[in-house]
Image (cartoon, rainbow over all chains, first blue to last red; front, side):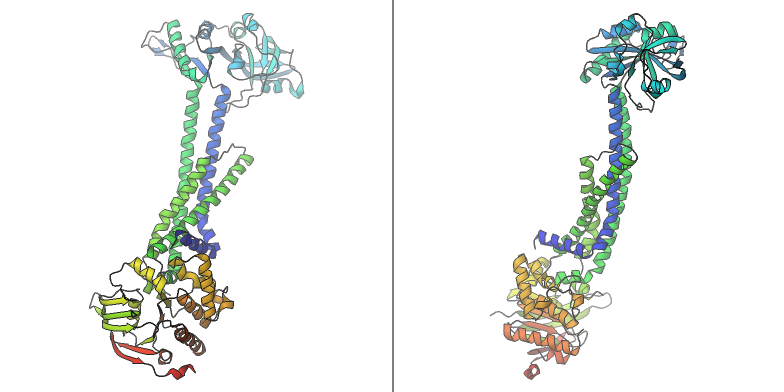
Length: 405
Length: 235
């Protein structure tokens, strides 16, 4: 007897018991839908994390002050105030470095247009807008001449614009008092949204770093430096060059701890992504358990079905079915149930993922591998849990089976 | 021509724990092509065991069995299943039709396992239903048919692959008197007109009377083997 005929017999048997077949599938349907939805949410989260990190600038390296050891007392990270504008100029001269911007930040109360607001003032170089991939929305960004002159000019983030100049008032040319020092607004930045850690990146005022050091803080050291490599492939090389250069400039002998840290955003990106990946694996694991439970449901119903159809099996054996034909018929029934359940589950899972992304505004993407994996896995569940009932059916004694009441 | 069934010194012993049960204690019987044999005997006489062995549903403990001239005692289970699907038909007391399955699909069942093509299957099944006078019920399900009609569908199923032998196990056991007459007349007609060899197990003498030869079992042995003279039953 041909396999195709056995398969058709199996499918027909399922169709004759439509409502039971659907209920049997339900466990697998739910399991697969759960797998698809969790994987979709996990993938969406990973994509959004890496998008956010890319938005910071994928070629970016951050130089931060490190720990300082003063007579055996070690300050924590950032305790060393050793990064200077001169370090920045030296780094800018390195090969494969396309831009450097120092940053110095300050929390300050600012006043303008009869409103006041507390925000983060950031002192930067003109290259900042390029390194951060953050263009202006109106006006101009800080120019090199503004840095050279320590000019009292500023560029406002959107949140600051909204709070100081509500109702669409034009901030360009207006004066903003930062710690009572008047700065003229020369531009506004485009909206950038939240950072990866949920911080509002638009709540900032950007001024030349020289103005910051000379007019607001009176310091000579920098909070950090953003360095941009000319290509993603050169990030590691630039990171090594910067480290060597700063060790030389800061007079740190080989083997001694550095008083600065060089961080590359790809490290941060891969850390965030691996966290998301672990979370996704965990979710998929939980969903897989429910798929296995669905498989046990199939085995249960197949065992009931074999008992109920004992006479049918006896008859099939009597009219000339080989035992292998019976085995295949019941195995195909189980696999067809679980695979169809898997396919329906994929459909529900995709719908669910779309619903989640629409209603919860959570990015969701259904990867093709997840679809292929869950359908293949549910077929496997059918084989695994269908084999025992099928083997039981094929081993029946036809004489006993035919008399079964 | 080779006999359809040729058994010699057939023994079947069930090895139970306490004491082995001897179901067949040396049976010899030959059934030629075209015969209509009724197998009779009280419960426990071994007639059912004999029928199961003849139908390859059970195997003898010892002895010789040739089906259509071929020694089948050493054949594998798959080989026996293949012979069953092509050369044997079964009719049971309880009809054993597949529920929720049309009459014609039920009749097709043995051909499914014999590897007959779809179109040929359907044509042969309809012809067999016509033979038993149920062509117009081809697409009825078993629960829409009377007991007698269901048993006639089962007979159509048994003869659809033009078997060398039809084995009928108490085929009228569940039927009323009128349906019993119909079913037995059908067997007789198939034997008379088509020359189909039939072996029928029954404990009712009225039913056995439709056959042309009666073999009686008692305590695992054949105690009587007579030709039926009462041909008048048919008229």
